[in-house]
Length: 297
Image 1 (cartoon, rainbow, N blue to C red):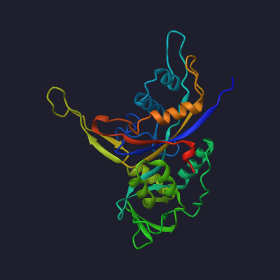
Image 2 (cartoon, rainbow, N blue to C red):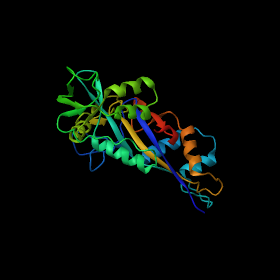
Image 3 (cartoon, rainbow, N blue to C red):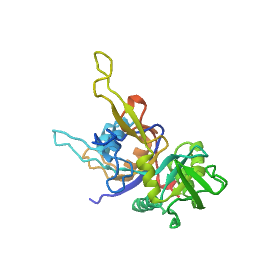
Image 4 (cartoon, rainbow, N blue to C red):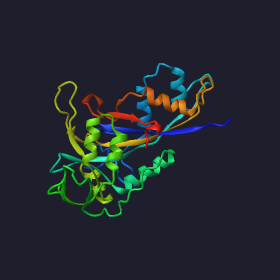
């Protein structure tokens, strides 16, 4: 029997700081965030996303949950899940600005990968933007951006940038597809900037939040000897996306087409999810938007 497959996009907008941890490291930061090996861009592992989606799913149909996410059984009724999820890939990273509070930064390499992934998902392609003139301390943004100083310069962190052109509508596209609330979407349109790949790489490596943490002795309620450690967080307002694909159900007792499983994921997934560590400290709260293909334009 021929099976079909469907792919959609899931966007994650971090409402609080998030720690998708990679374990301990022998470095200044004891608990860094997960990063891609070759780019050093922050990422959220697919295993984390799939676990969160399953545990937070609101469906009361247990058979559908087992068909979508898989099951293990001793009675020969085990099945692989129909759902497959990619690692979450960063689209935009917030960086403090001298004017306008902060900017959402992205770069040509990020946008090229986004275009490729949308093609993989068989969505209508994003317009072919040309960012070849972005290098060094140059930046693309709307000409009336509130981030600009004297209409031509921008100070992000301690670095001075010069505006060399418009963002070509990429801020509008990200605002339209990645967030749920209109005030945030409107702010993205005016505060999105395109910087060079090198500048973006510097920001995501060196403009994260580093927190000093301690562990307490359970009996004395005082700090344990040598219990100081440093933990890295991605700041609020970071935006990610992931690819969600589905095949037809593989579960013998539950028949469903890939398109129906994808649609149910859209319908049953909570609009806010907690992802990563330190949930009791308010970390990792993300607004979630899963797109229907008809919504992309």
